[in-house]
Length: 519
Ligand code: NOJ
Image (cartoon, rainbow, N blue to C red):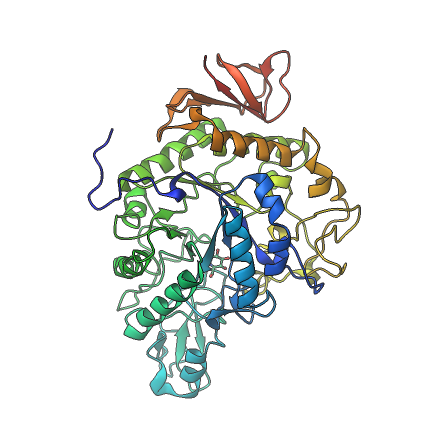
């Protein structure tokens, strides 16, 4: 066994093996009939999550926001947006979840705030009050050019000019001005925010753009080639600047006052060494690893993604994390080819993911096998659509409300058919109601898999031993085999615990995974 990393607790923490369920609150369940999901909707539907067997929730932002980026533009970080309810509704959710043994983590958005945040309103009104943001004079003879060539992740320039001629930096939408993390008040404020929610009983935070925040003092130009959404090249000056680690160390000093609370960072950086730095013993507890999200249904690619993620976490002595989708990427059923084949592969990958050591994240709706939705232009809401000059359709297709019951939209999601994004009329067979008692449904598969993962000793151990290109074994004895080829293959020896689809004459068919235990 590897020697303990200095400073890292020897006691396994609850999160290091937990199954998290990501709730996109707009899309989970609507309790008040306005067509948008809310906190009471989540509370009312907690039975679904208890039945699924998850141990923790991650809620996308529910703080006060004008919703230019659906909550990632926060104008008051210490209150709930009325669209989602109020603080009392959060308290109800916390109490109900905790009574079921489910922890609740929230999103923290430290890189930027909303342009409606009082600090930014004050900065616009008074040029002497701009130092909590990144304002600069423009380039060119008359200052009419942006201060540098940085582009926004959502498309277009990362700078917007204000009426008096200065420019401010926003790595995302113009309604999301970046904070200046060299200002002490920014640190003080994040501490207040962390303690506000932790004192209320929140169990931790997913930290948005955890590789952002710190900017190089000279703001040098970036290389504009190969500039992909939320990926990072080693030399991209917008992200992964060393000073970001001081911010994480600061956040950790606060978290350490709440020993059961967890932080998980959204970290898009170049290379495992850079990734591991965020997981040093005095920084984040967990980091999202996106290798599986970026991999096709391909044996070599899946194996490389798993090995790479395990290596990255091992470098820091942290638990690895696994995710197949979230609110920013197309759903896995569609990424793997849509239709019956896409669903079969998504189910197989669910077993692969849930067989791995560490922390697993399930994006709401994955347990129902939902596909991405091709939405008409006139309903698109993601700022990416407009900022890219309507070249990129954005992320709305993976954010369509969940179908709960019945045979027509809104499928029990809301009392109004006028939901914030339309739900496809043909989702009847995908509802929770339709799948709950069906032994072959995707929901049943997830429920069984999570119960086995949580309850069986064969899932013990932190490592993975490859027995072939697409078969691995956990130290406790669990074997997971998946078939990404074109013909059925022989199963490894052992008793079959679960398969993602029917076996064929005792063989593992293409697009199928199996869990086995050896005698
Ligand atoms: C990453 C979040 O996951 C995404 O949804 C958001 O748009 C950006 N950060 C900006 O906050």
